[in-house]
Structures are given as C-alpha cells and as structure tokens.
Length: 477
Image (tube, rainbow, N blue to C red; front, side, top):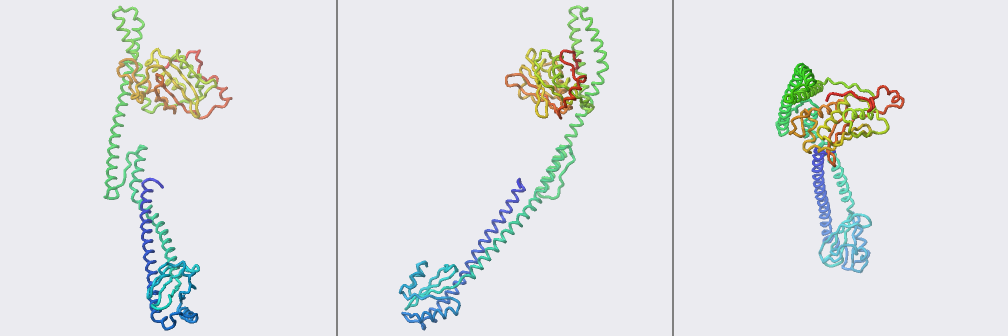
C-alpha cells in the first residue's frame, strides 16, 4: 500500500495506536498503583494494630521460642506469616536481601518492601516495638500480580483489536476521502484516450467539490479548444485537398506546355532561353509540390492501405540506392533479410531520405546501412553534411518545415513528412539524430514478425526486387 491513500491510512492507524498505548499504559500504571496502595494501606493498618494491641501482651522483651510460635500460629490463622527478630542473628539470611530501611528500624517505626520470597510475590511490612524485637509480617501478593497480569493481557488484546479496527476504519476513511481523486484519475484516463466528454461528478460543496468543478471547467475548455483545433485542421486539410485537385487540371496543361518549351529551348534567343529554363524548372517543382499535397491528402483521409508481401530487404535497399544515389556506399548483411512489407512505400521512404541527403549535404559522402535486431530491421541513411541544429531536429518531420529557413528554393519541406507517414503506415518508425563526427543520421525501424522458412525464401525468386545492376522505376518525390 503506497501513495496518498497508504500514507493517510498509516497516519490514522499510527494515531490510534499511539493513543491506545498512552491510554493503556496510563490506565495500567494508575490501576497498579491503586491496587498496591490499597493493599499496603490495609496491611500497614493491620501491622500497627498488631504491634499496639495483639503482640505486647503475648511476648516478653526477650521472647522465647514458645512465645514466637504462639504468635505465628495466631497470625497464620489470620492468613499471613510473621517473623520475629530478637537480635541474635537467626534472621540474618532472611534480612540480607531486604532494603536497609527494613533492617534498621527504630522503636515504633514501620517500613515495607515488595519482594519475592520463594518465587512468590510478597509484601513485607516491618515494625518494631518500643521495647522489644522487630516483627516482619509477610503478606502474599499473588492475587494482585494475577489481577495486574490479567489487566496487561486485556490491555494488549484491546490494543491489537483497536489497531485492526483502526486499520479497517482508516482504509474506509481514506477510500472515502480520496474517492474524488480516483474518479478524477479515471476521468483523466478517459480524456487521455480521447473521450473528451469525461467529467467528475460534484458530490459535495467542500474543497473536493470545488476542485471537481474546476476540473470539469478545465475539461470543458479543453474539449472546446480541441474541437476548434480539429475543425480548423479539417478545414485546412480540405483546403489543401481542394487546392491540389483544382490545380491538377491547369497544372497538367502547364506541364505539357513546359515540355514543349523545354524541347525548343535551343531555338530561343539567348536572352529568352534563361527565362524559359527557369519557367520549366518552376513548373516541375510545382508539379512535385501538387503531387506531394495530393499524397498528404490521402494520408489525412486515411485512404492508404498496405499491400504487404515478402521482401528481401537487402536487395531492395541496394536497388533503391543504385537508382536514387549511385554514389552512396551500401552496407547490408551477407545473409538475406526478409520482411513482410510493401516495396513501393519503402522505395518512397528511402528515396526521400536519399534526396534529402543529396540536397542538404551536396558533395558529402552518403552511406546506407542495413542491420537486424531482435524483432526489428533497421535501415540507416547517414550523410557527412552539416547536420541540423539541435533545437530544430525534432521538427524536421513536420510538414512544410525547413531546418534552414533561409532556403527559398529546393524542396517544399514535405519529403521527410511523407517518409514519416509511410513509415507509420508500415508499422515502423522514422527518427533522426546528428552524428558525433558531423552529419545527419536517419534511422528507419521496421517490425519483423517472424523469419520466413528456407523453402519459402527459395520460392520467392520471381517476387524479389531487381538487383542493383538492373534499372529500377523512378518514383516521383
């Protein structure tokens, strides 16, 4: 048991236990003192009476054995024993363990001591005649000790019972006190899972009630804010989709016209040729941008479906590298690495990563690595460029984000976002990090459900991707 509930329960139980112990010890001490004092008062009064009334007429200043025996017989009939010390040393062994106040009594004095004689609790009351020997009255205190032992057992049992009851009551109280917190935690979990209608019922007008009302207001504000964001995002997506569709028709005509213009650039005058080249390049970039926007529209509409098939990942990586970045160094395991995935999407992901390395690290070496770990296949695209500032690297997979805002031309800032979307559709993950010695490392992790049997691998020859020495179809960025 931990947390606030455990601490609250422990605190309540500790308070009850401490209170019980203090009251129990105090009660025991009071009862013990009362019983012993009452017993002592009765036996002291009896000793004064015996010394004043009973003994003087029955014993001489130097008592004989017969006188002592007669007195002991009288006291024995009354339920206790008495020893007489005539001063001749016969009681030295008995007197040795007693307190000095009992051994050196003056005439007419009384003293007492609680002791044990022969394993039996005893109250010794001592008194001396004004003229004559000292007397030691021995009273059995077994009943007092038994009563105190019974009281101790009862108090201990009561303390244990109270501790158990306190534990049960404390848990019930803690559960009741923290019930609103549990309800709020469940509501928060529902909100975390996307149920923005979750609320905390207001069951009181105390601090917890005010807290529940504040929680509900926060949840309502959050629901309204997220609703506005979702509507705005939906509008933006519809806008991008509509614009992309509307641009396709005129863009098709522009691409055709730009193709005609490109074929006749050499026939143009030199001062017009540069303008024509720029126009052809801009139309090409516009076509790529519209295609990428259309692809993002399909992602937003959840229209993408995976057509997985067994793929030799090493051969596919080498083929893509040969087509998109022939100068790249490719390192793959010697043994084939087969995964169930969609080759088209892998080509799109790795092609975009290679294009990004070529654009942002021109002339720098590029390396592709493929390796396998338990349950996952890892493809790395490593370049030797300048890398990305640390405060911007987490955003490079955002749409339209450019790590270098000063770049006006080049990519649209959608290539890495599209690659990350394809990786997520394949059940993988795409991440980036700066390399220790400079450059940027892109890491694609793909799940590997299970290895294919050897006979299945051998039967896949026709379905495998083409080797690097053969041409690979060029995908649009």
